[in-house]
Image 1 (cartoon, rainbow, N blue to C red):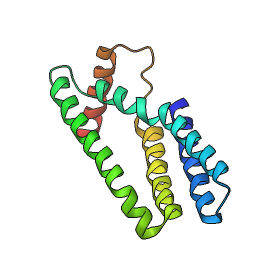
Image 2 (image 1 turned 90 degrees about the vertical axis):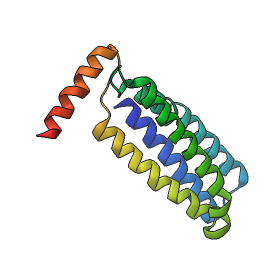
Image 3 (image 1 turned 30 degrees about the vertical axis):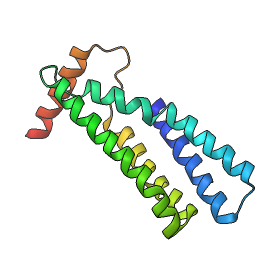
Length: 139
């Protein structure tokens, strides 16, 4: 539940950034919330991504699967960086950040509903959990 709260904090910071652009708030306020959003990301989605991809796959395919996930992650990072100036130019800063709010809110729901707590569990215990979970969804 802690990581869900962190992702929601990230979402809320992005929402405030978006509002700051809409109301033409002082630059210092906007910058403060951009920095808070970066800090919230650094303790939520950033480490969660790496932890999740290292725990979700069975040992026999973990190396290859993590390689594919890492490539997709870098491609996603490139896409975000490439589209940011295009979006801000075409729909404005406020709407660009509002789009990011929607994406991070969906991420928060994903974390809340689908990502189990793995603190204190071995990789073998986590693999057993995912294996059991996949069998219940196959039926």
